[in-house]
Figure 1 (spheres, rainbow, N blue to C red):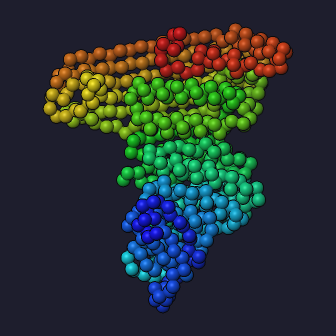
Figure 2: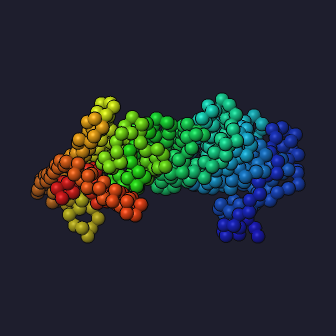
Length: 523
């Protein structure tokens, strides 16, 4: 089978070079060209890629594309890089590389790793100095770069770097400030799939946030984690920044379609069960979906926002929920709180101008949500208040004929549309107060307001300008609700030994959770 046939069937057989490429001198170049081929690799990337033939030292001596390795590549990492370097997409270029690098570092007992594979075309034979310069340039100026940093509980730092560009692929792993223990090495290997999943998500088009396994890093082994990426997406730069430590968790994603930002206070009080936290997450996801639909936000950007929110908050599952400072709060009153760490989250879409005749009418979407929890008093006399807020600001154009896609131009015949401006706010505040250790107040206040201004144009003439407001507020005393639920819970435990608390609360949570629509509060 010739190379073109192999490419058409996409059935590559990859065999890494047997030996590393030593620095090339003038004499070695001559011997390389005359050497008998030792390895034949059929590449399946495209029809223009011929069979590559490698000399014993790893340099391809014939063909259009040649690969030169920094060191011996006869291992799992080398195999992954051999496949990845031939890919044309970011997803292919980083496929398997992150996991293989972490696995290799763990298998090498934490000894530093440096590997690169450089691509050359034509017949030019670079010298050793040229190779080193190209390796340095690839690592420092690559179009696509990823760094991954971990700090161990013992104080050592682990730094991984991946770089991809037209020049080839380069990776490195370095341990500083101490040696890794057997448990830490095992922990590194355990993070391999999570790291690779995060890379796979970031290199998709459109990108996905896939950090669920990565954020559940064992705090007994690793005290901080940081993942940074700068990737080329259709000619534009997409950046990603994830940071986790004992005090905070943050994620920032910036790309052509907009920006996502989340900041969680990992040290804040998390009062509640896993089921309670999931109920709070589900409620927020409903709010996010409603905001995206109402403001016509970008679906892919909102999906990344929702994934990031869900996965960062999921890091709390399985951890101790009760903060010692307010351990006096009983199970029932805790149920009125979200169970989530305090946070600030925002999504902002890149504004667009779809109407050339009225560029001031921008298409935009921004949404913010936050939670803060405050504690006052001490001992048996204390209070807890949890505040949640959300805000939506958006604007978009909509054609008057639902059967025809809107196409606005400079001519007035195309100017048949409505321009919508959305301005919504919502809030929820829950308060618990204790007097001599006895719960004396359990209350919740909810508020939601919505405003939509719609200007309608027919052949460029404003025919209607209408603003529609709506609002609702509700304050509730929840002491009686808690007493009733806890009475039923006690009875269930006495009769069956099982808890019915989460099920009993599920239908009641809308009375104190954040609600974005006035109709949900008025119900």
